[in-house]
Image 1 (cartoon, rainbow over the protein chains, first blue to last red):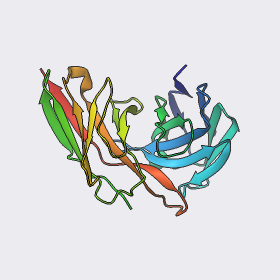
Image 2 (cartoon, rainbow over the protein chains, first blue to last red):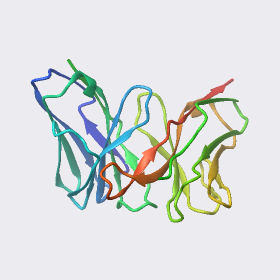
Image 3 (tube, rainbow over the protein chains, first blue to last red):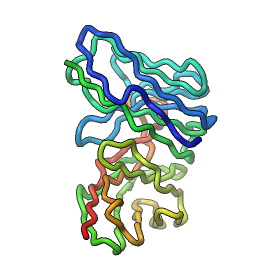
Image 4 (cartoon, rainbow over the protein chains, first blue to last red):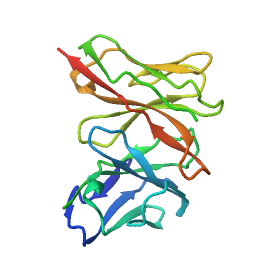
Length: 114
Length: 114
């Protein structure tokens, strides 16, 4: 299984809602990533988990809260988002965080904040 | 910090070779160059990566200059399905200041025409 799955595919939420994005991989990878991609822009790294521990937070606002319950699962909890947070949220995994490991990306969750 | 520069767009006739350049003039000596592509509304797909030597796989070839300041991705026989945004990626020091993170350039939108 060389697939990264993400649910839901689409999400519409209001600014007062709390929602979560889910990402799953069963490749035995120990590094997992969240990226944010605005329209016509490249993906931008948000968080990196290495061996289920948060290793990198790229100065992301606290209304985004990542969680890695186990080595196969990565969540992104959303609360009090702003309309400018509307974007494609991509999850990726790699064997480890080292430079020579390729990342496998999921299809993304398209988030719209009203 | 190493950053990448790519032409915003290119086009190629079907069946011909597509040569996609990338400048990464400040890349550090032990950082790999990665190439991914993103077909509209999908997650990025890994293509190839390299450190110093030229690399080839079933999808593409990667030519890295001897000084490592630039590279070229070659799709030897482009097809219509190769129409996508192609990203050259190196790791740069992140906003958090503590770690090198994979950083997408602006990418090249390749259009393969019949």
